[in-house]
Image (tube, rainbow over all chains, first blue to last red; front, side, top):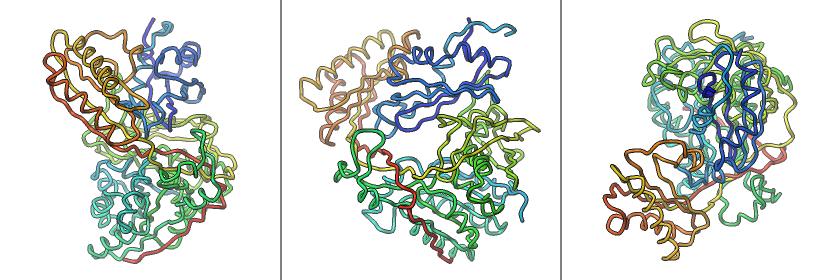
Length: 106
Length: 446
């Protein structure tokens, strides 16, 4: 097992009560591995206690990236949240801590 | 007809650094300088300011930014486009004209007005998208309603000879799309060009976020010289071709990685990025490093725009009270947890009325919650944080007070209390039929 951080980078964005997290392969050869390992279900489980809504995954093969859209995640919305990190900007770092199957050749 | 233009991005939010825009104007070889300074709820806050003083309600840093860049922009013929007008673009234009005059610069300033659609939203009693309710049901808590305008009125202002274009609420990418439409004469139904132009605007609108800001992760993603981060330049061709770059010698980096991260920033379905001018499609975009700090972006597309405009509705949602205190050394975590238990019980005993409470240990679980954080080890120090939502400022104050009294009534060796109470101006959205927003251009001469 390796950490997602070893093969991918990530950025979080916010709109209202929805957070999106991109997961981008450093090397396009790892895109199939990302697709197989980093599923909506696993992301939702990884963010237990954070994501209260659903997780939808979008695929961008041209740039070897996945985009996860997580609803009901930002404490009722960025502008009214009680959270210290109301935007959820730090969430990408939590996702990169996910463990995935080792990739051949890494 | 112009074949290509260079657009600099001088600010990615209202409080952004001042001098990168000056560097862009002096050394970037740019034709346009765009400042994106208007956050989601900033218009509502600015509207509150305008209600107190009719000549205010625009961006508080407008004067400082304009004084910094107007002389060099005037000397080089660089046109400025910005949403620093916030809740009062006309006053912002008058102020900018006054500054230009004081600097001896004969500039033509344009204000875009008409994004304020509060009356139309009230008349239609439009439904709120984020929760059950309508505009009228917000009652006297309603502060503002501003439509995200498209690029057309800004492009008209540029075509009318404006040196500086100041809008209130407009879509952020539209600030960048406007110079393209003006310079290249793009048709407002050429959806693929508008889509690719939106890709350009989206990559540029957060300024330093595409040149290495919000990116560095030492040992994995290293970025040089973030203290002197250079802001981006988009080289756009009349055919929609696009290269993202920055001033040579400035800090930061433009790489395929920085561009990919920013491409997906705040994007949901990449095939449908809803904009007032177009439904942009980012899903087929290609990102290619062609030279150091030069990245070519191609493949943005678009489809017909929707019949409605998104409207940002500002309202007073509630009040938030908060208190913090720190514990350190052996047993810090246990004392922090004890402190949280005490405050939880005190808020009940003393009958503080709140609709939502949050108990955090900063350094342990404040960012990602107890479940995600469970696998980490014990820290040397922790900071207790209690926050609560109330219906009045008076109740909100009581939450911080219950943290403060831990000094003399709580666990051993608690220090460094801070407390605060504030009203919460939140935003929600409604969709307004497009023809009910009637933007127009007003010129002010310096």
